[in-house]
Image (spheres, rainbow, N blue to C red):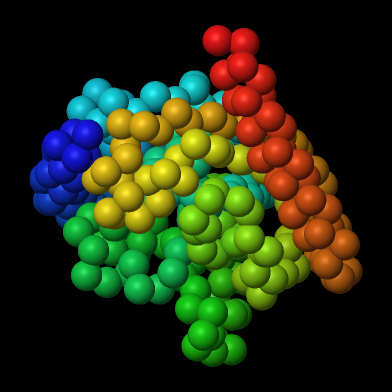
Length: 257
């Protein structure tokens, strides 16, 4: 099993390095030469990368997972997804496969990470550092959310848990995004990936993954001028309930087998 995990890491790492070269040259050049097709080029490239990463974990790693539901990819769509593993980003990208999401990302990923750091800047991902957000950072996050021509995706927990349960939502970034504009909110909940939460877990457990995923929505966000706390609690409760349903379905199927 560890061999398969190590093989996945080797293939994924090599792919990321090669993809960064393509992204920095062909993708950037295409976006500059054909500015009217910029979003189409970016969408096609990000979707290709997501399919590649998920294909590697399925074929080389032995992971098994359900088809990924598709949600609307229009401006004004906000995707909230739970955070279980290293594969959450490819999963949320494939859920918005008619376009691509701008993913709220920890600022440490904006530097020093093959492919990912350049993508954060190229795709204008909103970046956050909960421990050191300045007023300028907060204003930029809200402005990006208000003006984004593509969906915004956020993992409101901020961190992964050891058992895949959903942690209490971090409020600051979510409140700013909800205050930026009216949203159609979709909830995406995945389960079964938490066994590969960290890199060491990924190497040892990727072949054990049996991933399940559901999407529900849309839910209309409150007026941007209003306090979103009640809405945030509702979304948090709905995501927890959806995760419980996924786990119950899994237990029921296992008992029937």
